[in-house]
Image: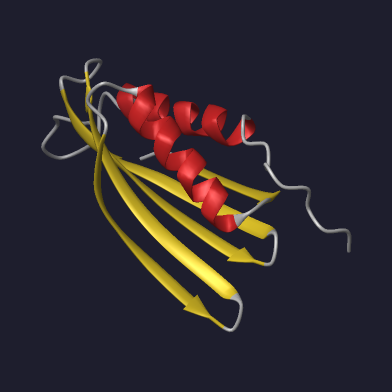
Length: 119
């Protein structure tokens, strides 16, 4: 398991689209599995689950992403799972780390298209 969390500023829908595009274009085997959206009193929450093949581990692994947003304040939490072939303990988690590092690059490259309102 690998975990990545980050606070940032931006447009909720634009950021989700940026993540989706970056993940799917970042690996030929990446696939969107499913998602869920929730909205209440100006707070939004979206969960997305992706899966891809890990050539390093010779298996598939998943990436679960949750984005919470209020106004232009965003919080991202991402966790990978899978990527191990051992029965009793995890070995060979290289693919999980690579998936999280790719996500971190995608997040780092996010630039809001619209100017953010001043506070």
